Image (cartoon, rainbow, N blue to C red):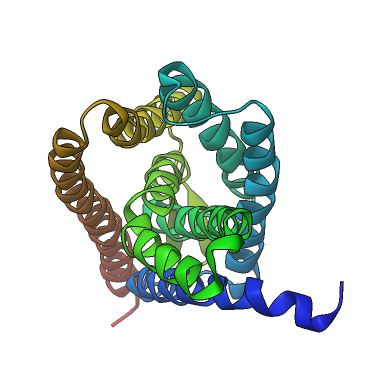
Length: 256
């Protein structure tokens, strides 16, 4: 493949890439007490890309489309969310993964990578309609995609983060013992699969009644924006409680 062959791909990828970078930078800065290493964030983004390269071709090979309710509401959410969650679970073993907000940041990175690669693959498949038309189509998709894949993975990452709470101390960090880690992670995965299935219901219902599907889409978009914002707020608030409490405890321990 020569350089000029990449120009159409770069053209259709630029708008989604910008939107996802802005979202990722936003949540990264919201994690104000201890920023996550950029290398880890990038690695999670790359894992999202890899997950999409596995899921999307498989779905295409199986002929998944909006007319197949079972595939869209059951198979696709399970396949995609499990693939994305693998990277988050593996990274959670690293000491840098600590708490809810860390999970949000890494989850957004995974979801952004997945969404970007999905857009590129979709764009390449319809390039025959023209680069500008495809770029505009992907721009519209990317404007609402932050509340799909990045949101789902951020939610799961936050739930994983709840099972790994690190408390700052004078000697470093101390991990809190959290019971039911496996149960929490499983429930988190089931939750995001359900959220994903609800999202896909819009596509399924549009085949039957586009007007009703548009109403459902508006309701779900508003709901997911509120849920996404609440999850970020939960992570920020929890971090503040942990770090501010540790700071106060440290100051009381200091000799007068």
